[in-house]
Length: 305
Image 1 (cartoon, rainbow, N blue to C red):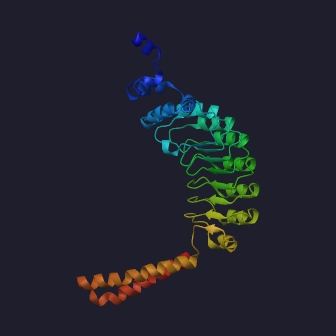
Image 2 (spheres, one colour; image 1 turned 180 degrees about the vertical axis):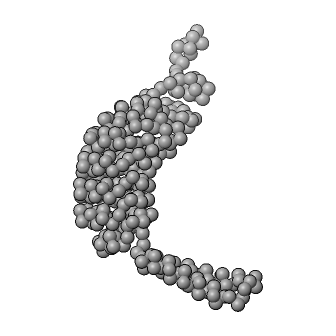
Image 3 (cartoon, one colour; image 1 turned 60 degrees about the horizontal axis):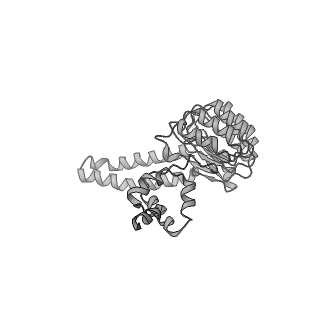
């Protein structure tokens, strides 16, 4: 009789936790139920802590509908449209998304455009799958965009970038870096439409010239940072007005570059002469060597200016 009474009063928590409850029961409960369960009592709280401690993987996407920020940059190697599209579809309040993944396609970007009307920040760096149509879709539906990184999106050309500039007037940060298709046309359109622009990255945009930089200086009074490294057609004549406004530019002024170069050469000259003397190679030509090195320094300095 006592055994029957004990059987009738057996509770869930009387079962072995790590052998029964954790691997065979709790693993089937969604996150919402687990959180609610740990509030029931101290024992249930301890049980859920044991479960979470032993949990190797945790799927938050299936039930989550209130995401505001989503970063996929660390998932670049494996995430595809199949995994991402359901998450995008049920999280329409996303404001910040980093989709810098090689395995995605334009369908994911179109889904973000159609679902996330309040999107403000978007990362698409090195996404070579981004094309003109998907960027136009983004511009049509996400006019409140404040920052976008389309570094090395090499399918994009002036027409798509200009279209985006006309639609996304609130842009404050833009990266067009490492895209040989970008010309003065894109930069000027951005400058004339996005008057609140604060940061612009044109690194490696080989076809950008002084003309568009001057337009940028004229139309973007709030500009704080400009990157033009490896833009060989951009010279100090267009950068100087921006420097006078204390805009941070990643390329040093010519005088500073020349001084650094001279210091480098001055440090190398004694080393080179010492090696010549140690090896006893043409010791009588040391003076000729110094003159040649000095002439080389002067030539490089002229190029810098």
